[in-house]
Amino acid sequence: MKPLLQVRDLRRSFYGVKVLTGVDLDVVDGTITGLIGPNGAGKSTLFNCISGLYMPDSGSVMFDGADVTRARTQDRVAAGLVRTFQLARGFPKLTVFQHFMLYGQNHPGEGLLASLTGSEAGRRHEEQLAEEALAIARRLRLTHVIDNPVTALSGGQKKLVEIGRALMAKPRLILLDEPMAGVNPTLTAEIAEHLKSLNADGVTICLIEHDMKLIGSLCDPVIVMAEGRKLTQGSFAEVVADGRVQEAYLGGRH
Image 1 (tube, rainbow, N blue to C red):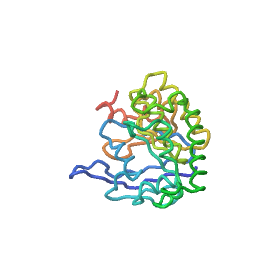
Image 2 (cartoon, one colour):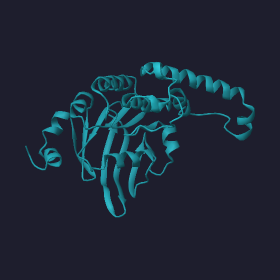
Image 3 (cartoon, one colour):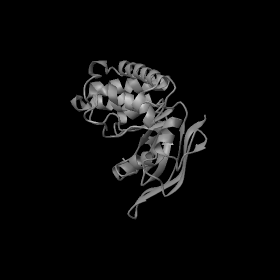
Image 4 (cartoon, rainbow, N blue to C red):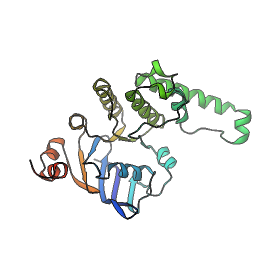
C-alpha cells in the first residue's frame, strides 16, 4: 500500500524543551489512521509541523512523493494536505456559508483591478464555489444553520463547520485534531458516520482522538505516540494489548 504522507525523524523543541524527538510514521493512502497517545506525547505539535503551522527543527515531511517540509501552508493546502483544529476556529461575524466560501480554492482575479471591476471568470468561479458550499452543507446536515453566524452554533456544529471548511479545499488527506472533543454522543456518532463516508469517497484521514471506543470503531491502523515519537503501530486490538502502550498511558502494565 502506498504512503500518502511520510514523516521521517521529525524534531521540534520550544525554548529548549524537546516536544518531537524523532517521529517516523506513514499514513497510507485510503486509510483512516488513528493517532493516539497520552497528553504531552506531541500529537498536536506533529500535526502543526505537518501542516506548516510550525517549522520543524529537523527531519522531513513528504506528501504524495513531494518534499513539503518547508512549504508554505497554502501550498500544502493546494496540494490537498488540510487540517482542522481541536478548538474550532473562525470569524465570529461570518455565517457558515461565508466560512465555506472563504476556504474555497483557486480564486481568480484577486488583484486590485479585478476586485474593483469584477470579472466574468470571477463571477463564474464564485457561483461554482457557492454550489460546492451548499453541497457540503447538505452533506454535513448544516443547511438549517447555513445563514447563522458560527458563534450561534453548538460545539458539535462548529466541529462540522471545521470539517466543511476542510472539504472546500478539496483535500486528499485531512488531519483531524480531536474532531469529537466536547461533542454530545448523538452528534459524535453522526460525525463518525461522516468520516466513514468521506473515506469511502477517497479522502484519507488521520485523526487524533482520546475516545478509544471511537478509535477502535473507525481506525485501522492506529499509531501510538509517547515522549515525542512513535511508540508502535498496528490494529486497535494489537496496540491496546501492547505492554509499552499500557505503560505509556497508565504508568505500568495492567
